[in-house]
Image: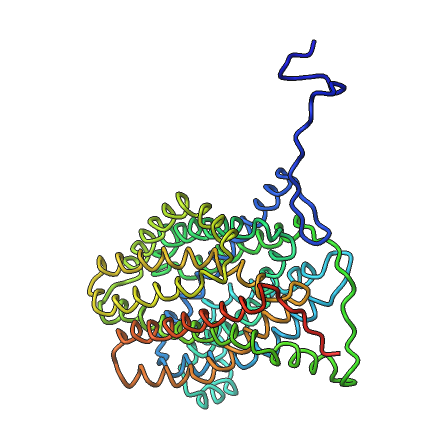
Length: 465
C-alpha cells in the first residue's frame, strides 16, 4: 500500500525531484559520484602535502654539512634553469596528448615513482659520499667542487627530485581542473585546503620532530606512503574525452615552440597574470631566511619549531572546518579574480608586522597563525582563479608559461638574494623582503582584475596558426 509520502510511480500528481548533475567536459557526476571523486583527490592532496613538507629538510641537512646560503642558492638556480625547459614541454604535451588513459594520467604514472626514489635517496647522500671516497678519481673530483661533498650530493639529489616533483605537481593540478566541475571548484579547493592542513598537523606533531634523530626514516617512510597514495588515486580517477588539439602550421619544425611563445606571451592580459605571480614568488625567496632566523638567531630547534607550526595548523584547521566551505562557496559566487588583491594586501601587512613582533617561539606562533588564515583563504581562491583566467583547452601550456616566467627571474635573482643575506648577516630582514613583494603582487592582481573586467570575464583561447 502506498502512503501519501511514498506515492506510486504512476501517480500523476507526484513529480520526482530532478537529480543535480555536475559536468566538466564530457564528465558528468551526480552527488554520490562527486563525493567519491573528492575522496580520492583529497587522499592525493594529503600525500602531496606530506611529501612537499620533506623538502624543507633538504636545506637543514645542507647547512648541517657546511653549505652557505650562497652555495645553496647557486645550486638551486642550476635546477631552476633546467626545470623551465622541462615543464613547458611536458605540460603542453599533456594538453595535446590523447590516449586510452587520458591526457594527464600517463605522465603521472611515469614521473611519480622516479620522483619518490630520488626523494628517498636524499638523506643517504652523505653515506654515498663516504663510499665514493674509496676511489681516488672521485676524491680528485670533489676537491674541485667549491662545496662540502655531502652537501653537494644532497643538493644534486634534491635537484633531481625537484625536477620530477615539478612535473608531478603541475600535472596533478591540471588533472584536478580537468575532472572537477568549475561550478564547485571553490568548494573543492576549500576541502582540499582542509586536508592539506590536517596533513600539516600530522607532519608537525608526529613527523617533523623525529627528523632531528631519524632523518632517513622520515624520508623513506613518508616517501613510500605518499607514493602509494599517488599511484592509487591516479589509477582510480578517470578522465573524460577531449576534442582533438589544434594544428600548428606556421613555423615548420619549430611550429610548437613558436606557438607556445606567441600564444602565451603576446597578450598583455596574460602577461599581467604572470607578473603578479612572479612578484609573489620573489617575495617567497625571503621565506627560507625567516626559518633560519628562528633556527640560528633565536636558537629554536626542530623539535620546538615543529610543534609551533603544528599549533598554528590546528588554529587554521579549526578556521577551515568552520568557515572553509563557506569561503569556497563565496569564491564560487563572487569570482576569485576579485578576491586576489585584497588577500595579498592583508598578507603583506601581516608579514610586515612580523618583522617587529616575532622575538620568540610564542610571538612566532601568533604570527604564523595569522598568516596561516590568509594562506588558507588564498589556497581556496588561487585554484579557481587559474581556471577563470586561463583557457581551459590549454591550461597546462599557460600554467607552465607562468611557471617559466617566474622561475627564470627567480633563478637569476636567487644567488643574489643568497649573497645579500650572507652579507647582511640578518635573517630577520626576510620578513621585510616578503612583505614588500607581497604588496606589489596585490597591486598587480588589482590590475589583472580591471583587465578581466574589461574582457567581461571571458578568457580568450589564442591560436598562433
